[in-house]
Image 1 (tube, helix red, strand yellow):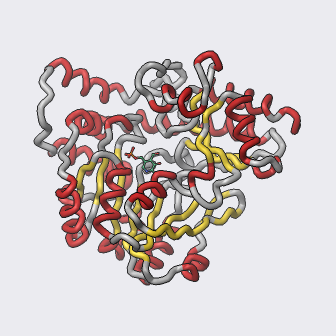
Image 2: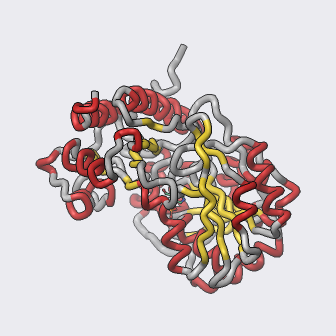
Image 3: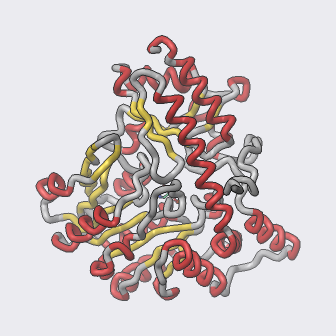
Length: 397
Ligand SMILES: Cc1ncc(COP(=O)(O)O)c(C=O)c1O
């Protein structure tokens, strides 16, 4: 049988240093790791792979033409977005429901401004993607953390506890689906329970589904609007090609709003931001969604192999536990079992193993004893990371 990963080479080591990459070129400034340390960059959530060939071909065609004026006609782009959603996620999207933004963190900020006011409460299931916290604080919204509960080694929401913590001044509940960190791919039942909760408390569901395609074999992502069509009048979905196809620098994302009234409120704020599409992002995203199916299938199979290698290696170190990923490539490792303070753990990982990771505390309550490791890198590097971690914690074995 042909292996889905055969036709694309995810094993190639591509040197990204000197390319203005935050992940690799930020190592010295942020972690004090120099090239002489032979560091492994496993923090920022982009991948060390080239995108599907059609993406670079689209850019090459634009460069060959050579004139880079304003972007206008977005019909091909919208056809690619709606085609992908229908083909890959079984969801028929009305092109009129799609607004294009400069990435998803920017889209998140615009949504906060459209659907809440300063001082309003916004619910986060923590630990969760660190930029949410930062943007919420910068916009003067009140963060209401709903701690995720660990059950059988995976996260679940505790809506009963959340109900008791609300004051009535909350306007938005943020869903991260699949969840970053921890990689939960929420089930249809979990999504429906959240929808019912939001309807009872009159909350807008802001569903960040940027990891929608990064789902490991055996799991199935259900878009929130498809899981609970009865709450489409309060559902806003954020998604993009940028995580899926490793084109994060394209800074191009979508806000999909089925409800005309919510769409009108978003459009007013979006107009106020005064932005228009990035030509290069639109070209790359169109090529990616139009043609990237086989590449994504191969990628997810490869990422599952990386996750297996990493989890087995890390699981062999007493006191360390890596949460089994259902989606994303972001391994979430709990060091609580070592009994060490976070500062000692990070010293061993960063100075001892020379691995740059994302610190769990930045993801909010419940993340303190964790580090997040980005596994979207050639397998040889994952193997090297495991070997370095085993050496750095050898005294525990
Ligand atoms: C949940 C989530 N949303 C958004 C982003 C980033 O979005 P963008 O780069 O489009 O601003 C990330 C990146 O890691 C993420 O994990």
